[in-house]
Length: 563
Image (tube, rainbow, N blue to C red; front, side):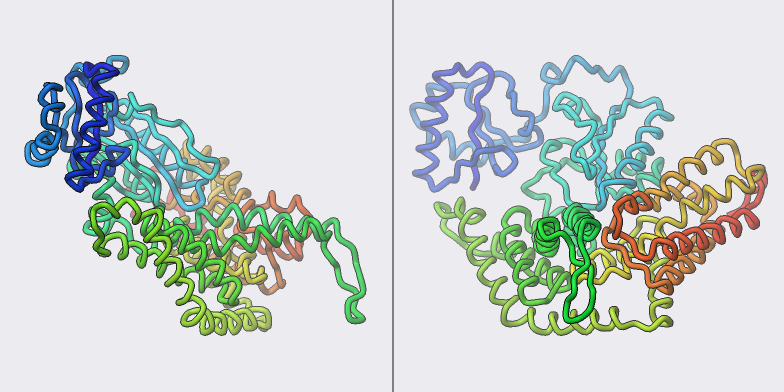
């Protein structure tokens, strides 16, 4: 049993601390575990009367001890009573913040996060804010993007909210919402079906308790295998971008030297070393944060070690993914099912789980998983590097088409993860098809609004201009407003254009050393080769898709009645 001891506002500084010390000694005698925060507590004992400043106790079982004389006389009895008599603590009217009164208006707070932390994160936030504005509700959305937390919610704003919407595709820390009604969804539904998600939030939201989060998520299927992968990819991505661009810079400042009688371009050694070290951390970050997504902090150490061993054994990103899942679920099983005396429970997350999970994960990677996965990765790498033109075109067309199928959704992310992972094996061709194909949908929609402007409403024409910019930045989600409005025409056109672009890119032998940046990545020499063929591929696919959609799109007045 985990006990958290806290002081009420009327406890008094001296009496409060003495009472907490007495209860801690009594808890030790009763084999109860005193924890440092409310989130991990089963029961909270509040010493002294008055309000409780720690809002994380809201929604938790709390036993208030107003008579400190009784506590000092028999602290063990107080703890025994607390276990049976504690009741759920609710925020009183006088505790609620007065700076932001409801005035009958519903108040929404939300947090959004996607794997790359770029497009879906901010577009979902904007959609939530717009829907709240339509309904006349107060709303504030915190974004967990690639640059960190944006528009951060204050404790007062969270406390006064009627409901919390967590539109997250990856694992994020939601502890600040403890005790609040919280509704979980993904960025896709929040962006495309915002009104329905608002209605469901008020119908299906449940009080959030971090201690039970894993059980709730697994029982409701809110967080599955795919989401764990996306969490790993999101943490790995900055390292891939940094490593790829630095290695490209090393070649830009490199020199030609004779190697085995052949003149080769050798990268500047210092930059090459930095870029190489960044690349060496890609797979450990991927596997480490897959495990972290599954088992929280106890999974991080075994996941990182498993990823390092995946690199050293040659198992690459595929081995990193497999061992990341293994380490995460192993750490979760040890945490949940390894029986220990109550006096040793506190050692589980900092000693026992990391020790056994890391040891077992390392042995499994070295003696079971490493060798066969290394062989498979070698076969795949050799095949990709020796592909004939026909096979390259087919692979490029498949990857380019996948990038355009759901514009940031699961199919898009599978193709993206494939291309990104192969960068760690120094296979750069698939990423060229992936990025080029992913740029097609927004560019195509922008082109369509330019050449058939009369068929588009004024708002769509403005969206088309923004879509062109997003396309240049490799943000496929720029086409979502068009796809959501006219999916049966937009999506097939984009898939055809993306497949043409991907196929052409690999037919030209294009390679790309960074997984993001769009055309702006070309500012660094050597990132894309050959530049001409790569650009021609993007232009061809985008124009074909844009012209095709411009031809088949119904004028705006008619399009409202067409599926």
